Length: 216
Image 1 (cartoon, helix red, strand yellow):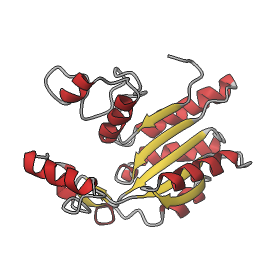
Image 2 (cartoon, helix red, strand yellow; image 1 turned 120 degrees about the vertical axis):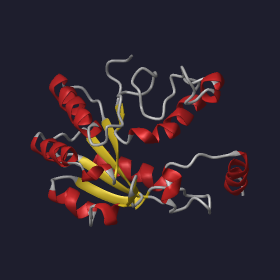
Image 3 (cartoon, helix red, strand yellow; image 1 turned 90 degrees about the vertical axis):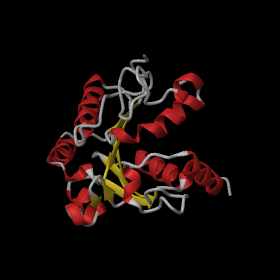
Image 4 (tube, helix red, strand yellow; image 1 turned 30 degrees about the vertical axis):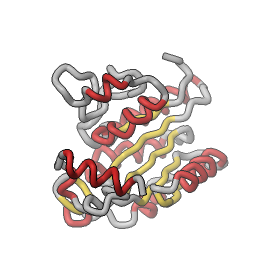
């Protein structure tokens, strides 16, 4: 409820389960809520919902969240606050024209308080991103759109944190971006780079097998 807070816009709203885990760790989501995830009547849905404290926007109509982040960044600039706006987008949703319109506008408005993080895992709902719509070199594309951009290992928290700090310290006036190179299903051998897990649910056996691998 703090007016001058920084914002995190989860444009790839189906990644909300990771955010639930973070909110649970700081005590904003209870054990009971986690246990009831995705059940009838639960506030914790499969997409980001702004009615859950800590989730800034309702997202999941892919391609729209970045436009919200641009609006928040513009609002902060006009209010002359020191707020920072983070937007996490997927490489799959980067097929959407609305993403590129938002990027163009962010550069036009010189929104140096905006940091876009692209989860570059190479997959989207219907298959590999390069088979659906080739995205090519996203770093070069973002730079061509006026963004200062870094590419890092998205599974390395130290590298991610360093890139964030480096970009915020930059003296450039434009928006910033990080292309986080990730592996879908990272850490679980039978899930890695297997797009069927975009939809498949864990059963008791696959859950136990996944936990066993992650605890090695």
